[in-house]
Amino acid sequence: MRRVTLVLANAPGFPGGSEAHRYEFDLVLDAQDQPDATAWRADAGPWRARREFPGEPARDGDVQHDGETGWSLRFDSTSAGRELSEPLRTSGPVRPGEYVTLIGEDGREWSYRVVNLA
Image 1 (cartoon, helix red, strand yellow):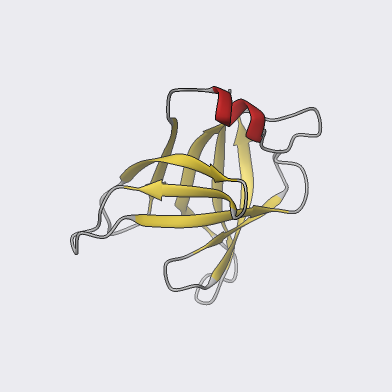
Image 2: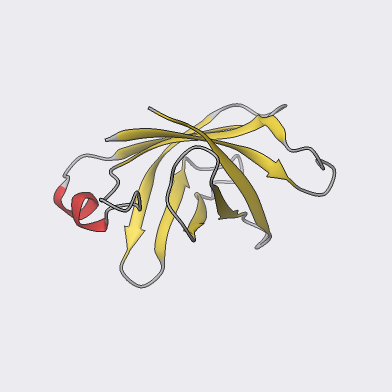
């Protein structure tokens, strides 16, 4: 199991990115450094996730995988009582310097850079 740390790469209002907008989550990676769905299905315990944004309380959650829709990060209910699920898309290996896309609850895609893999 590896701990992945992502920071916002760039976005409207953040042309240089933002290290304060970050995610940390646990993944098992396969031989190509891709998330391993077989390992996720075989593990009875949750794979931890955490979201930290400035001005918001940190949100704890877990990593989810669905055979049809792929990977997502699921977080505790919002103040409005809704669960937050953010689809996670990778087009290459998950390793420092690479990029992943998270899709926010508004449907917008956000680019994040992998900054640590522990």
